[in-house]
Image 1 (tube, rainbow, N blue to C red):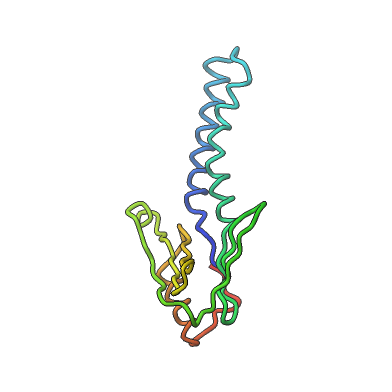
Image 2: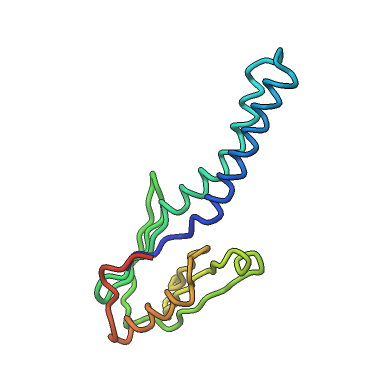
Length: 148
C-alpha cells in the first residue's frame, strides 16, 4: 500500500491559473495590444502554486510493506524512516476546517520512540487509510498491492 498526499488542491489551482492566464492573454491582445510580451509572465507566475503542490505529492510517500512502514520525503536530498508495524501505538487523523472542506486529512503514526511520529498532510480518505494501517499492524491484512 502506497500513500501519497492528495493532488486535489494542485488540480484546482491549475484550473484557476489556466483561467487567469486566458484572461491575461485576452487583456493583452484585446485591451492593450501594444504592451510588451512580459505581461505574459504575469499570467504564468501563478502556475508555481500547482507545481509546488505536485512536487509535494511526488516527494512524499508512506509505504506499508509486510510488517514495515516506510516514510520517504524529499526529491534531491531524501529522508527515509522505517517503523515496525507491531510497534505502532497510535494511528489517527487530524483535520482542520480547510482539510474537511477539501475532503482530506493529516495521517499521524506514532510509536514510543523519541522520534516516533510521522505526519503526512492532505491524505485522501485519511480515516480509511488509518483503519487499513491499524488492520495491517494487527496482522489482519497486509494491504500489499494497494495504492492510495
